[in-house]
Amino acid sequence: MSSSIVEFKSSARDTLEDIIAEVLSKSGSNRSAVRAVCLGISGVNHPNDQERVLSWLRKIFPAHVKLYVQNDAVAALASGTMGRLHGCVLIAGTGCISYGIAEDGKEARASGVGPILGDWGSGYGIAAQALTAVIRAHDGRGPQTMLTDKILKALDLSSPDEVIGWTYADPSWARIAALVPEVVFCAEASDQVANKILLKAVQELALSVKAVVQKLGLCGEDGNGSFPVVMVGGVLKANKSWDIGKEVVKCIQEYFPGAYPVRPQVEPAVGAALLACNFLMKESKENNHS
Image (cartoon, rainbow, N blue to C red; front, side):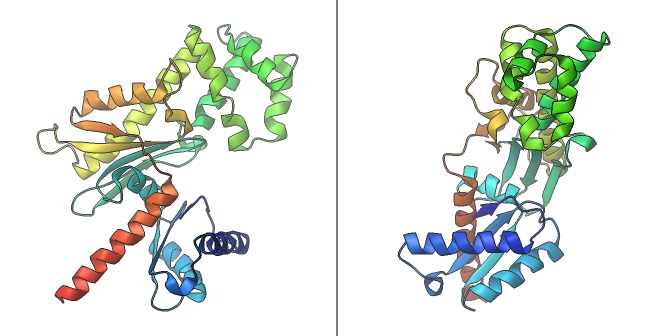
């Protein structure tokens, strides 16, 4: 099970408990029949975070159930590798993060710190730059761009001045990130401002993968080693002629020829389930050999 919880508050616990109950009901099962549970949760990056979630899980599952808590990026990686923890995952949706695991279990991450601290490859980062370009063009501080007409039409606004009020009325990440398709449309129509924004996003996303790969040595000593790069998130979906995901892969392979893209055929939640199964099997083998 994968979730986007930053802080494991009571509302999040209630929601997850309802989901667990619904899943068990639909499968015709119950909590006693469960052998292992794995939650993939955003913001779980420290043993203290894991223990807080585990303490809650222990209260609702019988003692025989094995419990595992991971960052949601781990579940996303597993969704592309069918549970094998090796390689790199690049997530680019509203936000973005690159995360990897080496054969020896060493982990590394890059980005995932929000747009204020430099996640410019995220959907929010792309759209925020587009909004900025509209204001700059209106002020005369930047070049004219078709982003102005396209974004005004998408937001049902009559002038760039109204963009300011729209932005600050509710500066939530997802609301702003929803404008990414408008930026892609303008780039496909050869608008240079939009094109530069997307090229910068591609470079930023590729750099975050590069940082993780170098930290872990996934490319091998000669730099040509083979490893998967699991591609997750709406920004990377291959459904446009200006294909951000495809361009990111090209850029990554310039650094690491052995990198190969994997687009998961299952949701990260299935990745979490695969992790639970693999963790359980590994633990059982270790116990049998001890």
